[in-house]
Image (tube, rainbow, N blue to C red; front, side):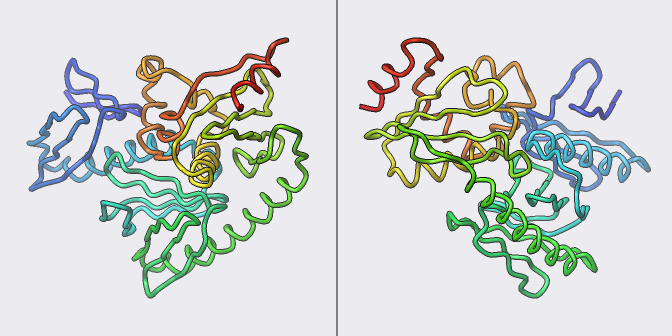
Length: 294
């Protein structure tokens, strides 16, 4: 028996979590599911239920991907069948505009949340909306029928509004030594932010949230500018789910949604790969922080 559930697909006695799905592929009225472990699962003989089953499966998979992207704001627009181009992949899928981001939800594990605060340009070229990031990365969405132009206009305005809100919030933050850089998690939560201090190939990040319990340490060989860019993107991506940046791989494996989140954010994977420990807030904190930064 087949049951489509919110967190996965039940295949008889087996439960396949969406966190383990690499791609969903419809071929000749059959559905193939590629898993991250390399397995290929075939679902066939659906008859008249094929279209409904495929639609329900991709919808549930997409909504679970939205959860993994921590896209928690009410959508401004949702287009169920838009064209998309992301690095290494192109096709058609659901495209969602949020107040602070654009989400692309393909039937693969490459769902992505594009934060509008880090966009350099959003330009409509014919029926395609080109989204250029400050990092130089480029994404394309479009061919949404009559929704294309309204989507583009609202996305452009949302980017302006988000950048203004973020700039105003950051301007109010007062840096205190040894911290030299600051940033927000999500634009809509200016009361939750972080600050970073740098040494040679080293970075210490303090989180200013409801629970100020530790300073997070990182070592890197990239340029300071490149590390800082990834740090900013990673912190914005995790939002209020900050434990993702320090959970061990074993702990992460026990949380399917968090595994999906890490799989869908290159910046979060980058930051996790640079982790060098934590400093708990106690009497020795200031001295140990100074020793780490050098």
